[in-house]
Each structure stands twice: as C-alpha cells, then as structure tokens.
Image (cartoon, protein in one colour):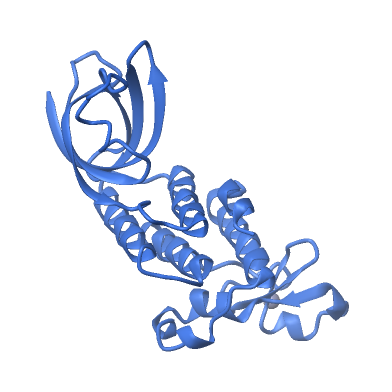
Length: 247
Ligand SMILES: [Zn+2]
C-alpha cells in the first residue's frame, strides 16, 4: 500500500549501517514511524528534509505484514525550528509531549494536527510570552477532544458549576465560593490571573494580551492545572518534561 501524508518530524534514530527510523506526527495516520533507507549516506537527498520539527509531505509504502512504513520520497513544507530560540524549541517539544499523552481518535486527528500546525507556525512569529501561548494552545487542543475539559470539580464543595480560582498546598482546587470561606485561607493561593484568562475567558485573550504575563507563578500554576485536568478527566497525572528547561 502507498500512503501520502503531511507529517511533522519528531525523532530520528540511527538504524543499521546507513539508515534511520524516523518518528513523526502525521495528518492522516497520527503518530507513525518509518524507515528512511540510506539516510546517513553522503548525498542522500532526504538528509536536509528529515530534521526535527520540519513538516514534510511524505510518500510511504507499507507491506501487508510490515510493522513500519518505508519512505519513498519527501519534500519540505515548513521548517518550524529554523531560527528558533531555545524557549521556542522547548514549547514545540512540550507540544509534542502533550500530544503523546492524549488519545486522539481517527475523527479528531485532522483537527488536532491542523491546530498543532497553527501553533507551530504562530510560534515562529512571536518574541515573548511563549509559555502563555503554549498554555493557551494546550487548553484549546484539549478542548478539541473534550469541550468540557476545563470543568473541574471544586475539591471543597464538589460542585462543577463554579470557576476554580485557587489551589491549596495539596493541589486541591477551590471554587470562587469556597475560596472565600476556607478557614485556613493562608494555605490557598489564588490562581494566576493570566491563567484564569486562558481558562475561562478564551474570547477575551487577544484583547487582554498586553496585560498578560508569564512569571514563575504562571508557570507553576499552569503545570499544576494541566496535571489536575489530566487527573480529573483521564485518571492519570501529566508532567511535560520539556517545560523544566524553560527557565
Ligand atoms: Zn467549592
């Protein structure tokens, strides 16, 4: 069988004398790996194309019982990591890590791919607030798969109707009502305001952009919130290792 798809390269591993196994996130097939025969040979025409975070148009084949696809040829559509700063690369890497942690159905793969591509294109154009944009991308991406992803029950009153506005020292979430009458008020921390905007006022994001900030509180709360969303909705924690490199 022959396949043609767009894909973003996410990993390249040497294989045998002169070849490589390449992992990518593709528009039509999700995460796949393919063999690039002879990639390490001098003058292999695909060497320049098969680089981390390049988006390629791939022509692949796969035998009936074969596990891996085999590359026939490819050409570059976009080079997302070209001229990128370290922080930009960290965010691209964190985006891929996030994608690896979610289950994407066949119906959702095109939307997820296209939204990821939009973020990759956009991240080339920005010069600050990388993590604010990454946080917004993460939440919106999760919304594509689950529109109710940001509904988190308050750990004090168990209601899902109220906005979560604070975390306590044990990462318990407190709603706007409970946060006002928690006895040990000194143990709760109000949610970072930029993160609140991303979560609860997505349509106001662009008009507020001048006022949004990324500081250590934002980053700390974003990591805790993302983990909370995963624990509540997917019964598993998440920690994006790439983000540890951000500061
Ligand atoms: Zn509550």
